[in-house]
Each structure stands twice: as structure tokens, then as C-alpha cells.
Length: 306
Image 1 (cartoon, rainbow, N blue to C red):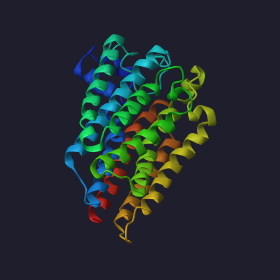
Image 2: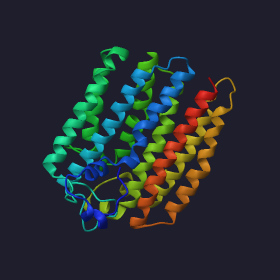
Image 3: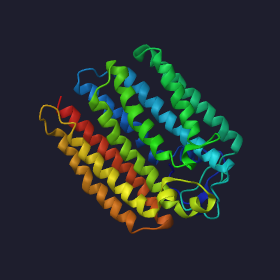
Image 4: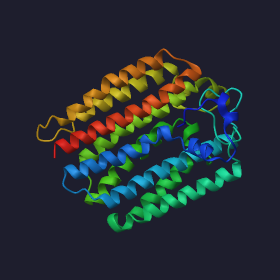
């Protein structure tokens, strides 16, 4: 997941500046970390169990975990030399562009993981010692996304990672620490927001298809082709919208508000289908915005149907 700043403007960023670090965090994509927590908390509110302290702890942990993953992706793509500065179609990378030194980036990754873990430890009080296991799995997985002997992002498993951790795990355990149980609805909601988050990655991989193919980075789009990328993007949004209907409780129609997401999603998809190369960077922000819209519509449905 990446920010929207072009490689051509990379030289305008001062090394180790606040702006450099903010861009390295990729703030335009952070809806993937925040929306699962917001939706799960709204479900807990609907079910009469909302607790703001564990909800905030989950929000901080999720956002920091995503930032750590973004930083690790930046650093290890530099190490693997998969981001060639001269041919990169996506927004510029912090380490490859010289904004941040590799040593400073590695230190930041460790620091952010430690900070996320501190917030995660606070969840033990609400969810029990089992939360330590959940936290360890999350940290190991976010590193495995970009690094290790079999990086998930380079071997066609990035989409699965996003669905699991920014869909099911983030949503289900945010709900769990507030209610101490799981429900079918929370996993359904996790699937919905997870599909929206996957589209951020699908778009990145669709845009980067030429460079990923030449560098041997086996994303799902490289494996199955550009047409698959377009179909997957459209299907994820349609399926997410359909699944919202199954969240209706006792015939309450508030979740039909989520149908407002569909025309926005289709319009974005249509634009992607008629755009190539660097111009696709614009749709990264739009895809993240769409996920935010979907999450807020589900949240509103939860609040109304209480």
C-alpha cells in the first residue's frame, strides 16, 4: 500500500524530514487499519457492549501495525531491489528515494512495532492472556508480508493476508475485547471490510503489473493477468455490498444504506479500466476513500438498528 506522491517529485522531499516520515506512513491507505475497528465497535454498540477504552486500544494497535507493515514493505522492497527508481509507476518509496536512510527505517519499524505492542498489552485486561498470542501472530505476519524466506507479498498471498488481518482478525478481536465472545455478524462484517481493503492492494498490483512481472514479483495480478485484476476489483466491491444485506437484524433495513457504496465503487472501477500507468495512482486514494465510505455506512446502519 502506498501514498500518492509521484517519483518525479521525490527530490523535493528533505531527507529525514517530518514530511518524509508522514509519506512513508502512507496516510491515504490507513482506512484499512481504522475501518475494521470502527465497524466492530459499532457492532458492539448495537449489541449493547461497547467499551471505549479497548476500542481505542484496538484502533491504536491496528493503525500502528499497518504503519509498521507499510514501513517494512518500503524497507524490504529496497533490500530486494524490487523498486527500481527509474521505472517505478507507483508513488515514490521513502528508502529508495533517499528520503530516509535504511538504518533509520529499520529502527522506525522496530520502534513502531514496540509501540503497537504496548497498546496491545493493554488488551490483556479486557481479552485475557490469549491476546498475547494474537499480538505475536499479528507482528510476525506483518513482517512476513514483506520479508523472510517466503514474503507473502511476492508470492501471491498478499490479498489473503489483507483479508485475514485487516478483515477478520482486526474486526473480530476488536469486537471480542468488548464483548468476550464472537458472533457470525462480526465475521461477516470482517469479510466486508476485508474485501474493501483487498482492493487497495489489487489496485497497487494492477498498476505495478509491468514492473512486478519483469522483477519476478508474483502478485495475484502477475499470476492471473490484468483482466483478473479488473474483475477481482469489481467483484470484491459487489460482493461486499451484497454481504451487507445479510447484516440486517430483525428485518431492520438500515444496512441497505450500504447500497450507496456500490455506484461509487463502480464509478471508480470504470475509471481504473480506462487508465494506465502512473495515472492509476489517483485511484489509490479513491479506493481508500471508498473503503472509508463503506465502513461509515455500515457503522451508521449499526447505530440506527440498535
